[in-house]
Figure 1: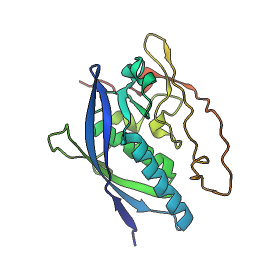
Figure 2: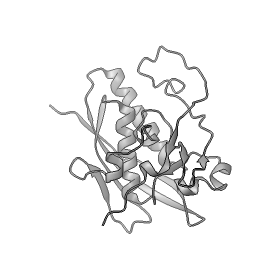
Figure 3: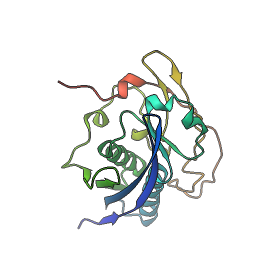
Figure 4: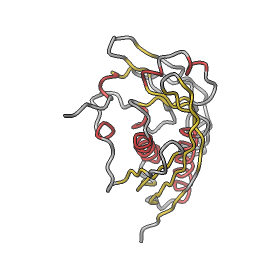
Length: 210
């Protein structure tokens, strides 16, 4: 018998678009299937998913990787989410879907995420097995997994742009151990900086078709 749970949060984010900061309200529905039979793992996986969704959308600044290079995100005190292309509702839905599945590590499987925003004229977008991911989220050419395919709590990377400039961002985000959301909670948190590889910007950009 399948054990499925549904979570319906609502958040307000700030989108950086065309040098303007635009507040956007998001209503989400996350439908998840519990896989692990261990109650502790179920709880940790669910808390990880909730932490990711809240960090992604609640008061965060969402911008493209090109805009990520501007000065404004560096001065923004809240969480910054750098996305590979224009942050449409469909793209944000897909990014959250892949990130949630990554951090749950198979203990819980995200079956479907639905998103409706105040900028979307009431249009509802869904990502699931029946409504597949955007192509560039299914397979990247990068040898290093970008943040939305990793199981950590990051939402940014260091990127190499087409002009060979490297855009870096302070990556001192919390670890699951620090949040007491590691699979073995008896391991005490150790605060440390995270060293990351440089990702080829072009390798994770969506490809123009046609």
